[in-house]
Length: 122
Length: 144
Image (cartoon, rainbow over all chains, first blue to last red; front, side, top):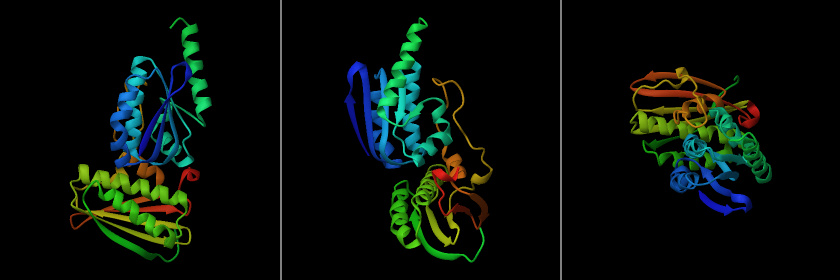
């Protein structure tokens, strides 16, 4: 599995995962993904090129999400195909991280949440 | 699931994490001949990966045998391993619970097997775990 990072405007980090998020895939990206999640303010995880995911892949995403949420930063997932999305929803992952059809809608949702939080004096 | 069963294929794998990849490659090689729909292949692949992980990491299995049967309305997969006794049919399906910054991570594999298979049955015989999984003809995201 490959992982590429695109630094978008307005502090958005767009990480694109590509391949099978199985045991080997999770082992390949676990370190770099966790390191990225340790510092990103607005993180959009693009699963549009992920053809398969199993529990170890979900675990990698959960570890990153937990770190981001603990800091009060923002994370979203986009582009998951129906089977990948079903795996995520089966574990309850969607209850802690929003799932969006594409990067633009995910980025917009994160910015909206941040603006809403700021307007409440957070 | 009704109708005559036809054993289509069977293969033994080493009790290693890497064997899950061998099982995936084998499944792909059998998919065309068995006429497996993409969703069904995804579901079987997911279940095999989780079963290998459980059998090797937790059950200390040395060998695992996977058999595939097809019939008109679906597929059966039998997973037999020589690890410690473990009945996944009685395990409570686990989901994330707790606050978004402090939830427990891990233990979701068996729940995925339960969710992505149509039916499961388990027996322990001659020191082996024998798990039979049933899948519909299109057992993926559209199967609920």
